[in-house]
Image (cartoon, rainbow, N blue to C red):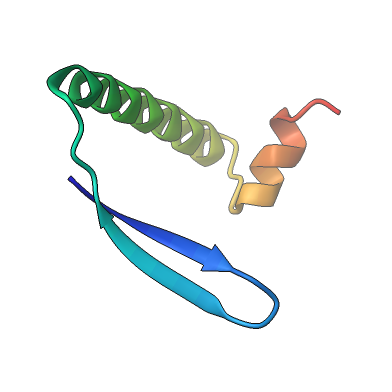
Amino acid sequence: MGAVVVLRSDVMKLVIQVKLLPTPEQTSVLEATLRACNRAATHASQVAFANELKDRNGLQRRYTRI
């Protein structure tokens, strides 16, 4: 499993590619986490579309409580 890490500062941006070597148990947890994130993103997309919200800020303003 590969991942790209992006580190940013005011001066430069450094991109580092790393290879993850999870145990079988960690693999299961990572896959479950990715599935949950995908479901959440799909839901957010459906809500935004249904409410004609065209950008992330509009969605955040409508559904974030401060």
